[in-house]
Image 1 (cartoon, rainbow, N blue to C red):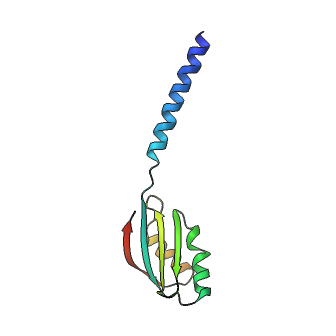
Image 2 (tube, rainbow, N blue to C red):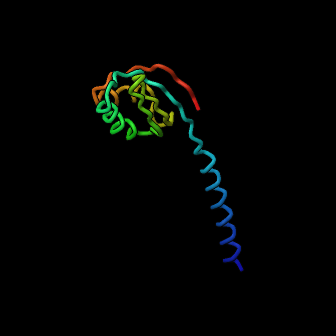
Image 3 (spheres, rainbow, N blue to C red):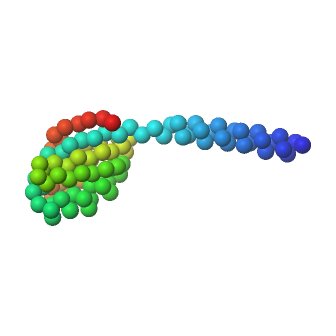
Length: 102
């Protein structure tokens, strides 16, 4: 009988802890549009092959016609400055054009 009560008690505590952990993991996303010098498909491929793999990046859209790159990312893991450094690593000039939170 004591074993059953202990098992039930441990299950209730486990569910409570897991529920609390799930509530803490609310992700704040931010979307930034970068004005770049991307003017061809090869440049767009360079961006597509590097920026999506930066920590916290959720989505990247490259628009060659307007020379913009739209990046959606988790603000707890990265920021605009880190993304600008990532653009610099692949030799793409970029500057922040527009910022919007989701």
